[in-house]
Length: 316
Image (cartoon, rainbow, N blue to C red; front, side, top):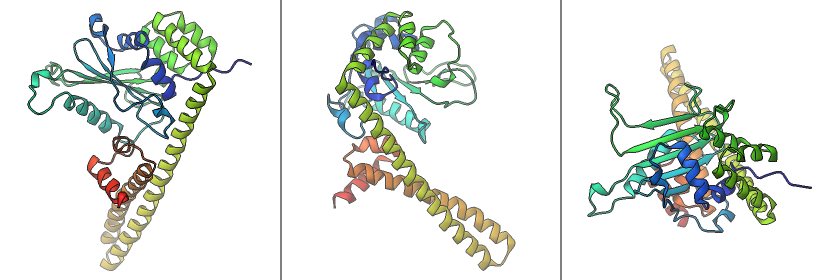
């Protein structure tokens, strides 16, 4: 019996399809970006944190980092579930890609444009129905763009309805595809998509690749369950303690105004303390599992300083 194709949304499959095949990667980038064709000649995937067997670990960062012909830096990432503080994280990592280009003594002229492409299998921007939103720095009054800076593209798979004839729409439908017939139909629209489908067919028929993809998906789901559980437990605990403290404050003051103020302050403080405690607990668990510090920062929204402090305390 022929097995169902693996999904390109699985991060192991995604990296195999887009991180190890330049025809596929180039075709996808050309559908998303408005860069000159020559930029894609000699593109190079650079990912120093990823090793061949790294996907066997419980959780790793499997986004695809690319240098174009002129040196522009592109980061492509796919996420199945909505993440907290995603906008701040996207901005932080884009800025980090900019900073990584220059070292002490280098000239600012060496900095190249940074482009982040975030593929979401959920609706992230509720203000419109457009599946491709592009964010750049620009003057709000004159609409003049800030040259060679940071650019963030957000692609939302659920917003794709009917085909619109564009190659980007075909790629978005490719990410959403589940059945062999869907993949084969889309492979007729573009040579790069046909190549991507060929990689998925090989992976889907390889028992080891299928096992790694399934293990990767299970690890992601387990981690998310633990994260959400610890986060909610901490939030609830903090909320209850804060509310009790607030009520006590109101009763002691003996005024209705104090009671209402105490409730509001208690809820707010309790919620914040609970959220923070939930994040800290998830970070501790992740560090005990030997996850990289940068990955823990990315997943929890904690600062690098906070995560390093936790890591140091665990070592002692």
